[in-house]
Amino acid sequence: MASRKGKRNDGEASAAGSVARGLLAAGALIGAAAIANAYIFYKTPPLTSKLPGGEVRYWPTPDGDVFYKKAGDGPPLLLVHSIGAGCSSFEFRFVFESLAAHHTVYALDLLGFGKSDKPPLDYTHETYIQLLSDFAKQVMRVGENGKEADVIATSLSAAYIIAAAQRDPLLFRRLVLICPTGIEELAKPAGTGAAAVRGLFKLPILGASLYNAIASKLGIRGYLARNIYADATKVTDEVVEQYHAAAHQPGGENVLPSFISGYLNVNIAEAFRKVVDLPLIVWGQDAKETPISQAEAFLIANPAAKLEVIEAAGLLPHEEQPEAFLAAVRPFLTTAEDPADSVSGTKTAVSSVQ
Image (cartoon, rainbow, N blue to C red; front, side, top):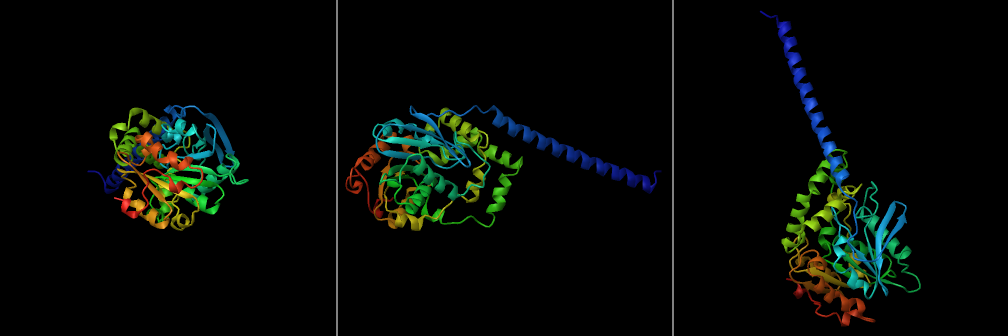
């Protein structure tokens, strides 16, 4: 019969063996996850711009180079894409040439997106408000000698344009805001757990794994079909491939932690009331993530704002219904003196919101 000491030693050895096997298994899983994460980024091809024509340019900033395309001749017009995994100036591909027929168009990829550099910063709303202000001044040369630019901005980027326009009224003349993120939603500051959430996504292996799950082709396709597009059949393989490639360029994961944790939000309720540039709000009738009911707060905050509703479109009406979008914004952008008097089909009252 074995002694108690022998039994204890055998039990301790068995427990130690279990712990060792567990650690080895955990290590193997972590190693496999690290390899899988690296492979996803490694196999992603370099991103190419799908904007037709135009000159490819880069603007150097202290934090990295910002990619943009410039095309056309005429009054300056800035195009600013939405914020989210895989977003870029790609969303303007169907209207870029038409807008360039009457304007000098600048379509940029914001820092952290598309073909621009993606430094590991703690991104905040101020990152982009300052970036857009500097781009307008240094690249487009507006704000000098009475020269102003028109601007088309989507979703959360519309808030940054509103803030920049209110801070420096000399930058912009006409604002076209596409499904701008709701005033009430942006009024919420980053919560008490925001730092923890951002820190979680910045963990070397776990954070990358979470990001790759969100920005997988399956995840992107599902998100676009459910939340962004009115017609899910327009979420083609080409669209998914472009978003996926943009999301997995080196450093592509660096903005999402700040976005998810709320650090990119900015309260623009007061700024929108004071903004002197006449705004045209363009909303997709079937927008889901930012429904048209949120337009009411913008119309109340600034009675000078006009609302144009695009049918059979979601959050990106310029993608789903480019001709209807152009028909809505062209009169507004080309009116010489007072665009408020001649925007075709606009609606000025809260009753226009359904």
